[in-house]
Length: 411
Image 1 (tube, rainbow, N blue to C red):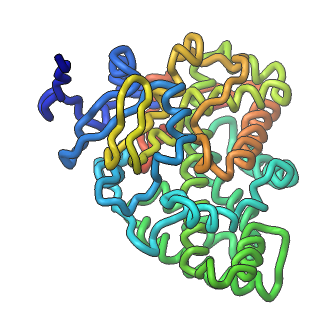
Image 2 (cartoon, helix red, strand yellow):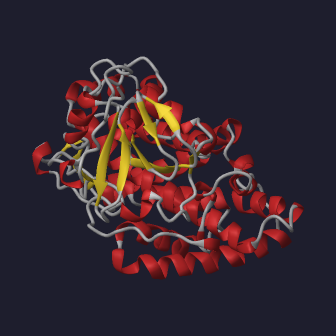
């Protein structure tokens, strides 16, 4: 006799995305309940579609390495259309055709476009950029010190740093940097200016690529032009612009979030802050990895099954949406003992904040290096750095991902 498996009705499925609580660096409490039931759970999205949410570390890692899981956002059933940007209530648009970036494509198109940026994001290249990151951090701290004994670490540091980092990465000239950095910052701070900023930056990058053809340098824009010119039948200008905007938007938002939420998390727990105060250079690498795990700034990774996949005791059918919830995955107790505890001395284990497999974040080496410089230097130069208000009075907020709107600090 064949056992009948009952499929839950839409009314019985949890609604997704799950609501967050008041603390800006804690994931939705509902993730833990889903994980207690199963590492994979069915949910109902806001557009009425069903999808799988993955909360298990082993299952997420296996799926991200599985070529049967597609990143093709042009698929009509891709769960991206139902994703709500945390903290805004605004649905994200579904990209189509030439608007797709390599993060939204499968091979061979994915690999062809990803090759545009790989030379600029190697481990060696990241280390070569370290002195430039150090100069940016020192200049921002100089500005904070000149203004007195306190500052809003978001507006004074977390917002400007990523845009200045992008300017160095792309090889933006000194005279163009004020306009460039202003519009990069708009992408994550001014919803009313987001669309104009995208158009302005697209035009900016178009002109930059032409200048780098005539006057090449040792920067990302030059590397992209060189790679594209070697493959004129494979890479178009639009694909170059898509790639440049992907790097800009994702790098700006994630870095800003990691600085603001990371510093809030550390300063909220004096014992953890003391680890960085006592040995900023030595403690920073492990601290950054723990903060990347603990905060999981990317929030979710969306995919769709191209074929049936068996994982975690469940069968994901072809055409079903899959959402890998990185805040839950990175706090799976089977992978991370006491996962809800921030422990900057935690022994290293690979978190999935940067993803895994073919689509692992291409800029992970650069991002990690930049964050190490940020956290080590802040505690080196401002050893008495602390919150200027009680942690519960720090206001949450932000576009795109969850972060703090302000972070008053003193030293």
